[in-house]
Length: 320
Image (cartoon, rainbow, N blue to C red; front, top):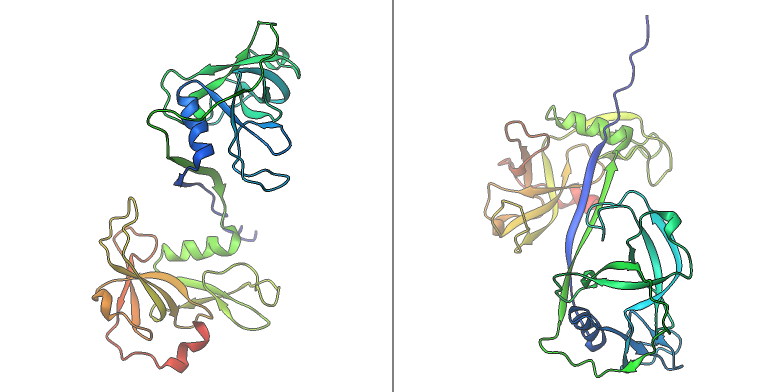
């Protein structure tokens, strides 16, 4: 007779994505607007050097910097690395080199992509030039990439520039995205599998006896493994809550609504959950709630009042 094999640990692709919006000061505004107009600007530092991309404060003295200069769209590769498998949203869809390029007239290097047929065609010290994007909006992507430069003329120098352009760019929205494969581990795999059966299962620490929901596989207080599984709830008590007034993108819930910490009966700490079935302004600490499941749902859609009297504060004060 063979022993039963342990359940397979779950794995799933996960994407964390959000738009990052920021306003631009006069230096960054001039730099990005300049790219839109096929002009590369740098800033002169307190020591007389030229930084490209420009910054607003001297990295050595912390003095405010405002003296803009125009540098050439040609430069020299100072170092590089080959990217044989480009990822989505990277500058080029075909293999390319990441390069640091010191543009003529600058004293620092700019990171961007170099379009080259292969790593044998790239070397430190090679001359390159900017390939401008066909459509430019005032972003670093207005430089589509760099390309090898066959010209061998003298290197350009920095020339003063007032940074003035028509219709300057004053803000940008950059999409931040992280793609990876997530594995919840042994303890949370068991927790997720139990949720699919409409049960909430935590794990008890053998030392302090606190029941963690969701389980973490080890007690963060005692540092020992938690292997004793305990079913908790399904009902619980609202310990604290907040009223949400801003609608989240792609979330089909009308505002305002309430998001709460809920201490399930038998659990040693509270978990998060949305409160429904009651006006948002009637949710309160101590409210007794129970989970509401949707057909085919793998976790509670929300929690609603059970109709029981509110829990006494002393019963949940340690879980706030």
